Image 1 (spheres, rainbow, N blue to C red):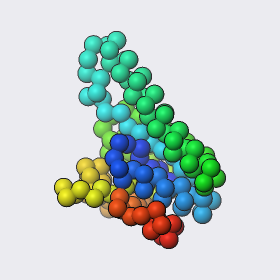
Image 2: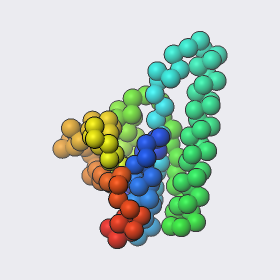
Image 3: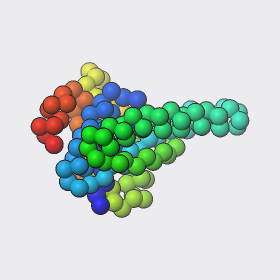
Length: 151
């Protein structure tokens, strides 16, 4: 089964990427894998404090994931899978794609900020020609109706 890999982060454009991935998976008989990456610099403290912060980060991610998962299950009939990795985001995304042979498409939301589409999109598009799967960029400013029309 082809999986749409979508990144869960704190960006506003993440919502459109989630919607797009779920709608495309539902229409094509695919699945959704949601990846969240915890940056290692968040835990450069004493070992006990770092472990506690890591656990709190995982709990936040799981709670955030459940909001999207409920919507995907209720609206699209898709039961997404959550993967949490630690490291640098682009590196971990590429590692996840390499490790899971069912991933067929990487879905990222592009920000609407004047600074550009966001650091992750900027970083990954520089090496887009060498990605092992196609990458879909979903405009962060696209309306829900616009997304539905595209899917």
